[in-house]
Image (tube, rainbow, N blue to C red):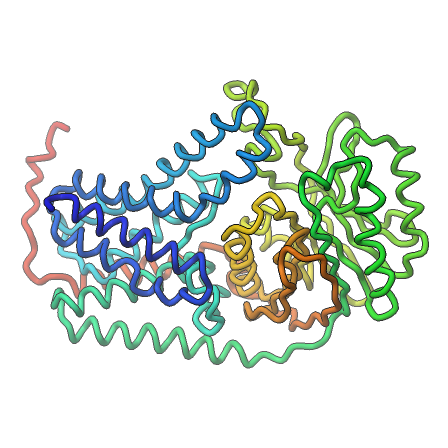
Length: 500
């Protein structure tokens, strides 16, 4: 089969990692997903060839894992739908470059320095994930750590190291298993490292999950299940509104707050103040505060807004800060300003809004914002609860729904805050601060219900220091990589690099 078997190995890792992230029942595959890639790297000495094979595997992974992004592009992209699909393919190839860089650099490092594969592989992977997360990618999905989101006891260390710390754990388990199976380094040392790391992570997870949580709020959640085509149909405006109001009236006597999804109040960006005046009359008989989403116009700008209403009067609002590229704004306006995506261009908000009810405070990340761990940390520093409003009707019944839900599991642990998610078509429910799914409505159905939100309100180390907590991993891991690396050091020919 020649080199094709190496491409199949790299793509095999892409496929296994895709399965681990796309189906919560298969998350355990993340702990072995990288073994085919490691086999490929162990049999290729040429860094450039390693790059090409790694790039192929990474591009294949992102094509499988993020293919659902093509649904709104195709359905609503209009005349630019083909250009949009082509742009997504280019994006997947660009994101695949990180896998190529990993393969190239790991091959080069192992040929140059006497380092331990067991530590070098996870350290390099996490370094590249850090760069992709913070610097080079507008789409912070596909981190290896998300594969373990369904296992609360394994992700409690995210409260110290964040999702990248979980990625390190995933890669370290994979590299230990590979070293043990191949007899590389020392089977004994690989087994000891694996037992210690797995034991420490599980032990810390068990200890962390003994927290006492107190009741915070009784919250009513309404999942309207309105398709994108019907959502902005002016003729259905009152019917769509009533689909949310009727269950809200039923829930009101039993809850402290009712929450609706993103842009659930059906006004258009061109709506006038008179139109809003007519709409707000519908809320006058609602006896409890209502947190709802709306596209709100202001001075020829449109904001994606979370409104707190009571008796039809606005008590507070938050304008979404972190917008979806090509969905809510066009990046690089000077170069791409001519592109018409068919979506409403919106303006980013300027400040984080903290809402209050009784003794409790909350913030409202909207849709894409939950992917931004830095923004969630800032919100959580002042808020006891996070209400995540979203509209995932864009993605129909695709794997995008469970993929986006899994992000909430990790975020909740990172900041030790319960996250209540309300989505138009699902997933709607809530996650406690331990990353456990406590309630989940059936998706693609009109559904409503009451949940009792609990929490402890304690701050995490990660919430205070963010990804700075990766420094001990990099320093300690680098030291151990040399300490337990091969005893015979390959001579470095510095003359080879002279004059370059």
